[in-house]
Amino acid sequence: MKNNKTIKWGIIGLGNIANQFAADLLLLDDAHLFAVASRDHGKAIEFAKKYDCLKAYDSYDMLFKDDQVDIIYIATPHDSHAELSIKALENGKHVLCEKPLALSYKDAVRMVEASKKHNKFFMEAFWTRFIPSVQEVLAKINQGIIGDVKHIKADFAFYADEKQGGRLFDKNLGGGALFDIGVYPLFLSYIMLGIPKEITAKSIDHKNGIDLQTSMILQYENAQAVLHASIISESDMNATISGTQGHIQLNSPWYIADGYSVSKNGNEENFSLPNLGTGYTHEAIECHDCIRNNQIESQLWSHQNCLDLSKITDEIKTQIGLEF
Image 1 (cartoon, rainbow, N blue to C red):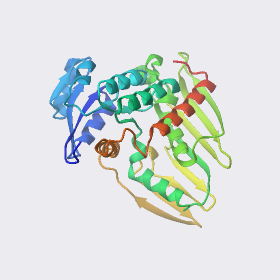
Image 2 (cartoon, rainbow, N blue to C red):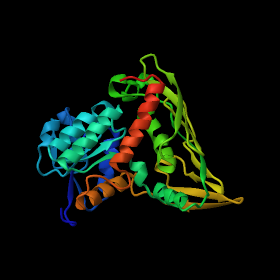
Image 3 (tube, rainbow, N blue to C red):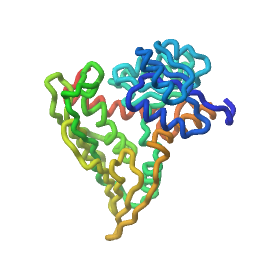
Image 4 (cartoon, one colour):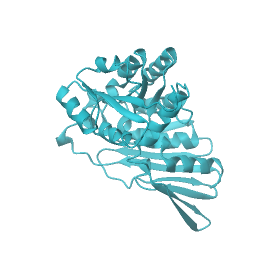
């Protein structure tokens, strides 16, 4: 694919996240939202009009078979990620799949294998990995600016009203705190410290079997991460990385931080790094770069990174007795 060619996107699953992603695509000169699909054709038509999109399908298969679409963003509920991603790859499409990649490590492996088999780019849509603040903080930590990292504290929590319904409380759609938002603090610990030696997790469960709140301690050789996810309580959405020579705090909400602070020797220095749009632009740019360079995976969030995080999440799922 030539570097100056506009990359044509398709979107499957037209909910809130898809709306934010589509709005961010409009900010990129080399991106074109070309087609969308929903089993509700009226919803697809409305979405397409809103974002100046040429085609609106009432069938996912029709979008898969559209030979003008380069890459498909899959933003459906968690339970369908694996099958839709694999089907898109089988139809010769590059794929950006919303997190969590799948509801089991076994399915995540199948998705990566499909990418390799069909030689198509595939990435989990962990947008936080690509925002400027996280990129810069990770670089500074690797440079040793706060010494050796010994402790990470991160949470992602909000109160959701079950009476309003929705997928968060729907077990059939992969609802609950761990898979919807718990993967964020797990991701932060993973990119900073890697794979833990030991995991301890406890949850508060719903009567239908999903986890409403889960707290996790990840034990490393010489460090710990204390993480929390909840859909029944509020939090400050802070993330702090503490080392032997200081600490770094990502601005709240940390998963879409617009800056960070470094505290050392009693002094604090603040850094401002606004995101482009909501922040989904940065992962879209990474997709473009990889596709143009004929890469089937990103070096910043690789297939192995996706699988590692899936395996960590799977271990916690087992510990808290979560079954889908």
